[in-house]
Image (cartoon, rainbow, N blue to C red):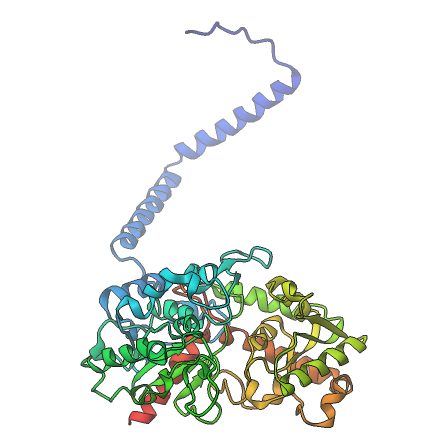
Length: 490
């Protein structure tokens, strides 16, 4: 359709001024266009710009995309040659680990019955708990949007480190697909999940069967014979006690995996090593709830921890334990904390059990406390130690085997820089508040800052991340293990 012709009304004085302005600008434009000198300058500018664009097109600047390089590494089967600092060093404030030839990890493609095949029976992987929610998301468990990004916070089970470790190494830049180039051979056996499913198995042969099958399988591999298994390692999400059944004591449901001669040749990464019989065992952190994919997420959390107000001098999260010695020290902590106005108590007895299994409640207590009491659990260690570090709460230990003799690859040798030690049998253990009040504010500030600095290396990054920009627990374990194996073999 056509529009009707519009009849313009006479111009107003304001419009006449506008016309004069635009006419003036039009005349100036015409002057510039008709000026031969300006025309020549414009032509030169256009020519030079076009030439520069042509050069950029044919000879693009060399840049390194770390994510692309990491992806390429898996395609070319040479991830050991990659230097992670190439793209991240100018961005990340953290020390980023490198994959030099001394750290090249080959992951054994085990038959599914040794790892992923076990997950199809997740309801029975633990005689006390349905593990199906916990083995989801590659072992991270269910997302926790209450704590932050659901992509970084998860309700991670304390005995699931072996699954997370496996997932991280599969996607790790130091992984090699060529066993001839490997310096480490990783055996991804979900031994902890299998062990907890067999605790009530009375037939000892049946209880040990899968462990024996694993050893038979490994010894039949060509790469086992190169160093008699001394460059091989496994990672276990449960304590060493669950794999070292004693022949002369009560049966607590353990199998004999770590007693097998072939496994004694290997290195064993476990959340708790045997303090006296674990010469080939190395402690790795219990997984907490935070699994960042980027260094920005880590830095954001660290800054948040630094700024948190801590109205309570100390806190204790725990419940009673069986056994006279364990019960006595925990009852003493509950008594002292309950009587103090400076202590926050979360009693994990029958009435408080639900809160103690709620990550947001646990971290709330810890982030509001300066010190967190770390009583031994069913064994020497406890996951609470790593929750405490994540929350920036200075751990107070009462046994050297809760941390000091366990995690030497991860914790500073100078234990007083990040923790407090009170001998559980000393008179000081009966007046904990007085002991903590003796520590100066300046010392507390320094310890707190040291603790915040430890968070990255005690954290398991998200398994799907390829360029996290900081060294996590798996990075530390692989580098330390490679150094240990190299010294042992050479």
